[in-house]
Figure 1 (cartoon, rainbow, N blue to C red):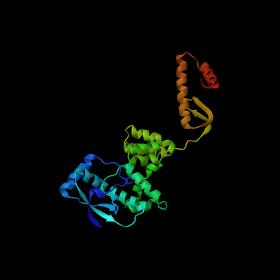
Figure 2 (cartoon, rainbow, N blue to C red):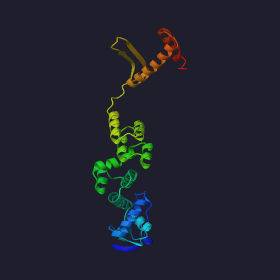
Figure 3 (spheres, one colour):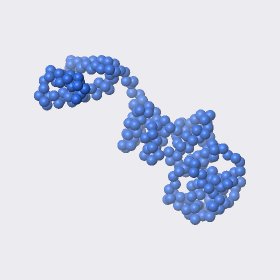
Figure 4 (cartoon, rainbow, N blue to C red):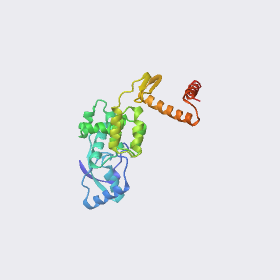
Length: 263
């Protein structure tokens, strides 16, 4: 039923997906509504609780309008139906933040545990691949979710981060927060995902082109461990040379330090 109601009739729904409203945007919308009229009615339940159109209601109040056109529904609506109406309306009428889109989609999946991603995509009239991206923050570490909430990263960044195991996500997040582009984040994530598995051995022998052989032994050594160990050995060798030690004494000193726990 289409009706015209005073602004006092309406009640906002604190659970609706859109959380952020900027005064400049609302003033601009209100000025437009005064000049051109209300182009789209808001929607509400019979008790005045808004189903969609809170942005228009806020703009009307801020701009001094006294009434709004409203579509009133008397049909009982489930919580899932209400959230679906609100999320769809907001995504079509004005851009939600990435965090708001994620939260809205995640809530709909929670309210409809029988749904698969394709079901949510169908209800929101979106491509399933887009829904996968919108829900990707759910697979991210809390620090990435917080950065999304604060507007420091976007959904595309979360999607790239979510493809990595949780224990590898912090590095990619730090890279993004330090100023890396979205493409750089995607490339870095792709490189990490395609890196060869770290094979662990107890002994690594490297015969260099110069003919010198370097042997590393220990519990569960990987190539990364070898690289780190060689760097440590190089630093220790330089220190020994500065102290005037020869190779034999250097070896004995390192052996003694290892026996004492590196002190």
